View 1: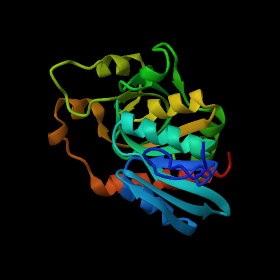
View 2 (view 1 turned 90 degrees about the vertical axis):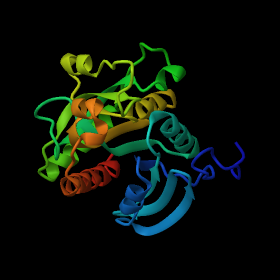
View 3 (view 1 turned 45 degrees about the vertical axis):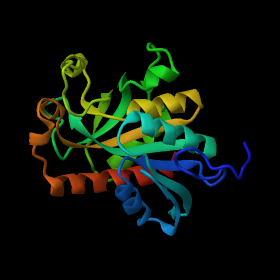
Length: 244
């Protein structure tokens, strides 16, 4: 690839992306994370893809938002990898699928069930979406060092937010052992596997996912609690990414 050609979606040049990257859905959250870095620089703001450069404890990082949903997120993930990313951690939100995985708790996703409709275009349906062992260990170690309890396990990456005419299998996934539901992790793990990149994710629980599927516009959330939980996941992810 010509180094001057802009990568699709993120509109960055090859070589502008550091080897260690943190991604999140919300552009404003990406900017918030970048504000915690030294020598911050705005790389580009294109649609939902906002990218920043900075240094955390002397380690160069790229922070990029990927928007909502796996299709656009997959574009960002592959472009970041083609741009130079070797380690990627997603800092996101999710809904719990277990009683104990409630608002204000934190999930580290060991793997994701591919229900988002994108990953299976890239890989066979039977191919799993699994986190990297080293990234998982770094996230768990960082949480332990900060005395933050996290739930670790398999999650579901779902393409739907609202319920529709067709039923989802989310309840069956929960019965099978899935602990949370979100919309992008399976795409990240699939992209990482295809391009031999190490990836992981840490997620803030904002409520019960089964309630959201039944009535997404009626589900009450505590914004202050979510902000505090997200702040914890950011701190954990930053220390984890530099120690992989």
